[in-house]
Figure 1 (cartoon, one colour):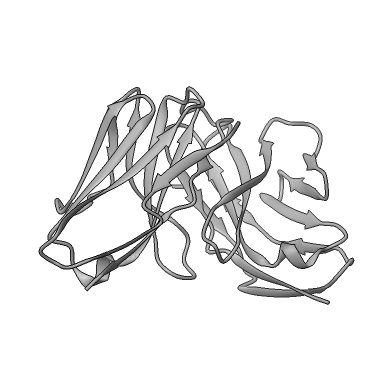
Figure 2 (tube, helix red, strand yellow):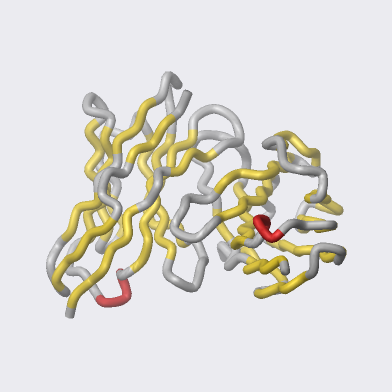
Length: 113
Length: 114
């Protein structure tokens, strides 16, 4: 069975600082994809970044980077130079074979001015 | 363009009403999804359509009835709902069902059942 764990229910970060949101996963699929989504209070789930299990390099998208450590089964999201608009819920998700996404419980990030 | 649209944005209905939620995408995606999300919880998968056929039904009560009229549209018909069905309903789509396929979400419909 697939499982995603986010152990930080809430995080605070000072504006312009970097922050790391933790995500660990468990799967028996030989290949899989890992995703991060941002959900502001408006409700829309916004796709941020993707990492494939066979990708050699860590994914980056602008201020977002994914610290992928396959042996440790972790896929942490790093947000650099935090902005007030980064305040939101962040969900880690995994997809193996088939049509299902498995979501973690989420981390609520608050950026302090 | 990675836009998925959902209507209505908000819906209030009584337990005896019949209403429908609508989802549309024009990205040529062949998989579409309905999720239910309670406050401060992750989305819960309800239904998956793949190539316009229902491929996953996560034991959802029959008062929720999905429909996929064509490859761009996904509906969720609601009938005789309960107050505990109040939630944010999210629609998503993806190109296919492979592990690299990103799901793109719509803005959601906030449903309140009185």
